[in-house]
Length: 585
Image (cartoon, rainbow, N blue to C red):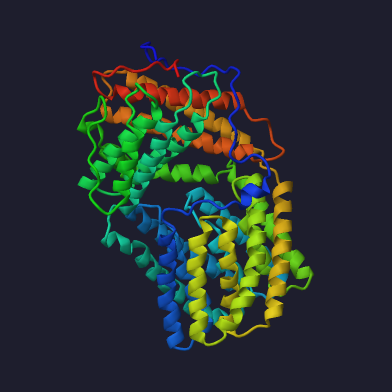
């Protein structure tokens, strides 16, 4: 790398090799392939079992298992927020509980005022679209809108009287409050657990990037960008987790230092760049993920301890103006030009068509078709196709599991409760390996819930579920194919402009000797965040059909220039550091 100075400006757009997108093409084998389970799969699995067991067993003791559908609505809120630090998790799960109660209230009131199937399906489809947009805009994370849809759609078709609604909502809020306590209970044992896991992921991703950085020749075939994008996303997620984690502690200070080392490893990988050794990064990751003390790394090259702190940025985010900026960002994601709106239209049309088609065929539970269609809609149509395959296969296998376990569940009410708890745990344990595998457990659990209000003919339940699955999947994907999302390219162009601005700001700040260290760090993190957003926008647009051509050459040039800027500015944290050139790679 040369020692020429950092120069701001737009990246040159020239012929560049095309990077393979993660979402192009319709590949059934890839969609059904099993992956490694999540490193935290047991947390939502155990949380939902504990949050459900207490209300279930309480209702069993008072012989009111028919009310489980209302307590389950609150108990399922324990599935959310497990990747968030506890300070933010408290607010997020509380919002989920209130949102769950609001959707349930709309459904119960509608069910009590009308028995028209057409009206119920219309309200259900509209609710699903609103829930989908809100979950995507707030980025609440898995399981997203599907749990809200399952609860509100089922409640629409349950017999209800206005006088019963306050009591039923009280059960939901009570179970939701208990789920909130369950979600936050681990903070009593390991206060910085989410931050430690986020930093460990960043270290592991940086180790992969440091071990395989790709060729230094910019014209050569380069497998490195795949690793750099993954490392950038993991480091960005770690910083966001630390920013939202609350007041600084000695453990969080050590975690900040580790993220600095992870960042240095991925922005300037390869020999001679000062990057950390991959094996050392992996060792730090293992210690960070464990229950022992967080490792204390040596100062990164060219840094001082004062530069590790992110207190100033944390204070800005918590200030009134910072909160206002966050609200404005949320409103922009919900605004008239939002790329989420076409997905909301897909959801509305697909769920309505699925419900009306099933009702026309005489199916007694059209909400199953609505839930099936709602579960398909992902960031783009390619991912929606993959989810269609996964949902269909998982549901069809799930009804076979239900047929096998139904006799066991009918031994006694306690056996029925235990079966539901088992499948709730199994669903969360398996779904991170692949969605279809989790659906194999979700389907019998959803069918067994009906048994709490009385036994139903097994053949009728199985037949309806199979028909609803096939019709819901077919109509849902048809709506996804017909309702195009031409705004996806516009999102890429906006992300490109944002990346150019962030890169120019980072270059100006690092070239200014009078700039405060906190400002340099802030602009670098802003650039890294813009690159993560750009890659996400590009992958989303690459999986959409029938849209404007993507500015692929500009996207690739902006990504390379952005990563070169990160590499060039990383060593300039200290006065004695020498920055590599923006023009070199």
